[in-house]
Image (cartoon, rainbow over the protein chains, first blue to last red):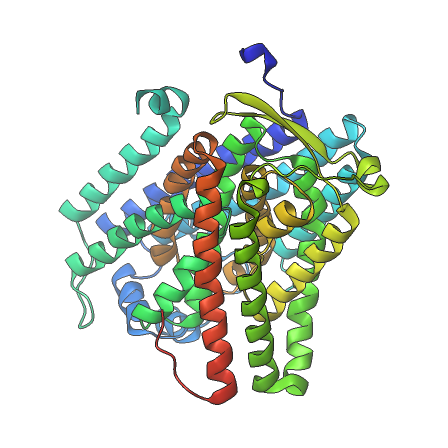
Length: 139
Length: 335
């Protein structure tokens, strides 16, 4: 019976696999980062302060100003990759980032499958996500 | 359970790592207590978030909605956490179950990559236009206009829920009477192996142009009111474009993940996403998302329809109550 099962399009499988494994890797990085955050003192910001401030209902501005003196701007965690906070945040950001290579890979595969309209739509979606990632547009 | 372990060993690696990590975090907790939370209280916040997130993710993936629909009202109702932090973490909740379930859905052919990209662009562009319009029109419309539109939107959702009820099983595997030429030219057709029926289900989407315009409207409304698109993707795909219900739910999850991946970066760049709060929610979404994806493949489409009807009624109740609150200045104490 299994020979009757339709084979999903390669473009879809490529898209799905990149996102799936990227998310799994991002999650493992975040688990390690969370553990370091709790069991060591290697942190960019004191996690006890962070959790308490969040729980108290402090605003994002108040939390950051209380911890570092100013709001961050840009990919702050990349400069703190040897701290628990930095590793946990990098794992999360990596999980989000994998969407970009996945979309462009799917766009290329759709082009190879001669699905031109969908390839163009995928490229447009990829460009929008990339532009957002670099902070060139924000709402 | 054994078959799940055989087909997705990484799920058990993730569960094992998470459990070990939380045990180590409990035993060797180095955090300093504060007036607000003790070190054990901090650990409990993290573990509680993870468990609740796992539960939300399973439901969200099966119904094809973003987990934010459940996360945001609960967090707003029961905690004093800042709304920006809740919205930023809500995006993590909305997207990570969709991200992780993308793999199994694409592998099984339950989500169709052509449908996903066909819907993604109008939703993303509509969402951005809606958000920009909200900024510019808020002065002109004011709170009254906002309340009226919420009421209308709530009414539309009630209508959609009733369509799912009275459409019955016809909505599970819809058979369009006529396929328009634009949809035919686009080639929005596919087939997948339906585990619950043990047979191949083929489908051809119809009314693609109307669907495209509706997805723009869905994106616009979602961006304008900060609802996201999860509340309407499944109804448009299933009821308008005649895409089978389970394929609609799968495509919706994949789409939400993609759309939110663009929306979440500003929050990351400006520090509104704080790892110590967001990571347990992310892990719960990833683990619950894998479980939900494998459950969706195996369950009957009728079950998906029932979950969707309940969620549509709950969401519409929230919208209607907020609309009435805004119009008449009264407080309706529901979720």
